[in-house]
Length: 429
Ligand SMILES: Cc1cc2nc3c(=O)[nH]c(=O)nc-3n(C[C@H](O)[C@H](O)[C@H](O)COP(=O)(O)OP(=O)(O)OC[C@H]3O[C@@H](n4cnc5c(N)ncnc54)[C@H](O)[C@@H]3O)c2cc1C
Image (cartoon, rainbow, N blue to C red; front, side, top):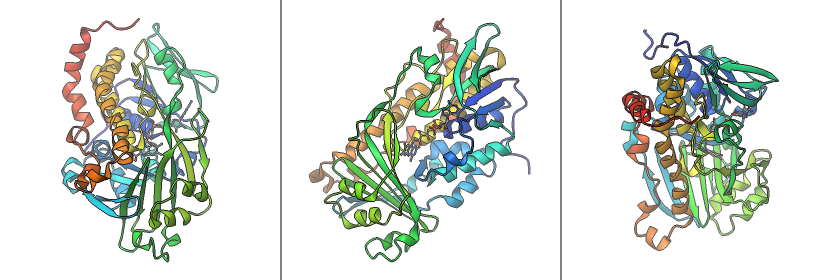
């Protein structure tokens, strides 16, 4: 059968990608698909250091569109994804409030919810199968760009490596930001942290308070209370269980952190919460609970370096709060758009590709980012006298502008227009 989305002929463009998270892998795969030649540097020696992180992650239709173009990837993901198209929402004391159905969104594309590490592994394996030059154990120490020759590059393991363009996808603590912004700048606390747990369903199968989570197939539920939301689900034909809840970050550590969590500590935040939530936390086995600080950044003034040969993507450009349910999907969109802009600019006009990429992404990604605090406030500060009369008030906003969106099509459609607009803009020196 002919390949539905064949690799384009070689473009002659050499790309360096830094980081093999969702953003870096998507950029690498999409650049490869467009015929660009990719080298990816990832600091970890063993990819399992990233993929064993157990937590639920969601890709909405706008993010999962890219997976459809990567042969075999969607089928592998569907096989391990949660089979629910609803979210049951409860008051934190246990009363059922409302079921939000996601069925009407099927026309927009797939929602894929699954184990973050396992979904990541599927994408990583696809990148390896594409033959992308992935160099593990390669920590990028610095970035540079030059006029003559017109190039950008990285310093890795003490060596300078050059290419036509460098994509910095190293997450929230990105070193690439220094050359883009001209100075160091640290992420700030969002004021919140999350407890995250994932474990076998056998732990709860005989517990009469919570066994309903795993007796009739996959489930998905949320409990809403003051300053906390607690999400739980069962997955893989209800053989595995996961839960996650936000809590105020009352630690005094400024930097991002991640610690093994203790159920007894987590329970202190949940006084007065219903027995389902308590039993789920208590059932969590040792070593399966993580306490993770959520860091944030205000929107950066730009994603691209002064000579427009280095760009930030994913969390290094725009970290997302989990309540937006969009961080990973937007990271994927970044890679898709960037690879397309490079295809359309060609090797001789890389700066135009990067400027067009920024223009195509900037407003959209920040509008998506703003949905995180909005949903969190809607849940954490819910006015229950109003919610009981109108339960849909606490539904997640599911907007077509965000979800019914094909980033590749949008880039093809708008590239020429955006480049024309940019022609009136004087480049930075
Ligand atoms: C608790 C939590 C839950 C979330 N839930 C969701 C969700 O449900 N849906 C959703 O869409 N988003 C969610 N997000 C957000 C989402 O996880 C991120 O937006 C997304 O993973 C960002 O990917 P990234 O590739 O930009 O960064 P990262 O995943 O941080 O990847 C960066 C990579 O770069 C590597 N690296 C770093 N520095 C260097 C260096 N110097 N040299 C070489 N390599 C380097 C790292 O090892 C890593 O592999 C959540 C985030 C959190 C914290």
